Image 1 (tube, protein in one colour):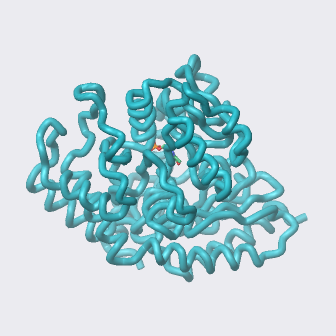
Image 2 (tube, protein in one colour):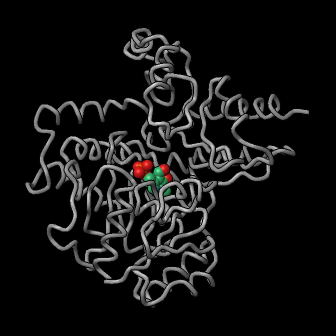
Image 3 (cartoon, rainbow, N blue to C red):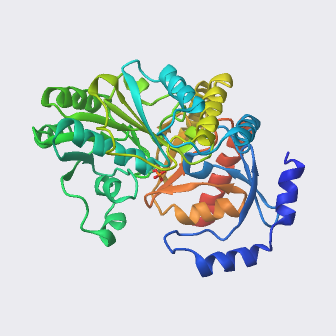
Length: 405
Ligand SMILES: Cc1ncc(COP(=O)(O)O)c(C=O)c1O
């Protein structure tokens, strides 16, 4: 299953205990870390420094859409490195121009302007700055339970107090309303609102889907009151939910859309797209040293090509549906609800998720929490179906092992 390069990487890596000790000594402290050093990967598998193999349901926090080490990305970045890596946006570049066209081919026709950056949070920052500049208003309305990133602007929109409290004062002008509550939105959105931002499935918040009626209502409300509607599709976009963009399920089109995660096949990239008729950033008011660099644009072009050539959004819809059905058919007193769409799945437990995740890891499956009680599954869209079957049985065994009387 794993090729020689991957096996050599595992063999060459330093002793796992040494790696852990070194990171513990020097790490920022910001992360809750798991006691394993992941040193190589292939497809939907990760391998640690002791050569142990895991099924990857973390997918680099939803980044790994195509599977690890896809040859198309390897070829694209190797070829691009031989030509040029660094080319700031003050110059034009062929890969960047191609990326605009590729994004254009998949997004709704009303989109046509893009700001390229290096992470999801930067795409969110750009969305807020552009909304304020275009509307000459300051207010941003976000949803309770949402996650939009950790830079100060994005953090001001992010809900969870644990993430916000150590870093105040945050940016003024932000307000949170209950998710899926149209009356609350009607009360909050007014003539000082620059934008409303919403995730179509709250990822970090627990895999909570937006309601169709709420989304349609929000669209009308924003249009009526001159506020811009931002969809944060950083986690839901690019095939994850079984369509190219999650908004296609709802047939509601925003004014701005934030993208990130897997857009460049695992290399760091964020992107903001917006309606062409809205206008642009005033010149010299925004920018990024690395934003839109040719290496990452080449990786993004290859990623979009693979998503299309391998029909990965369609595959996510098909196998995601079957996987969700098998999970929903489990009758277990500790499972409260199974939620999700495509290959963005949450299993809400009646107990804490972390011990179950630990037991799953011991048995070769890595997954994420969302909040305290949800097991979150974000596998590569190319994952073999037999791996999903193993994930299901490993999850059930872990549940039994941890909480069985
Ligand atoms: C919906 C959403 N928005 C924004 C972000 C922030 O992205 P990044 O971590 O790349 O800054 C994330 C990351 O998990 C996310 O899921």
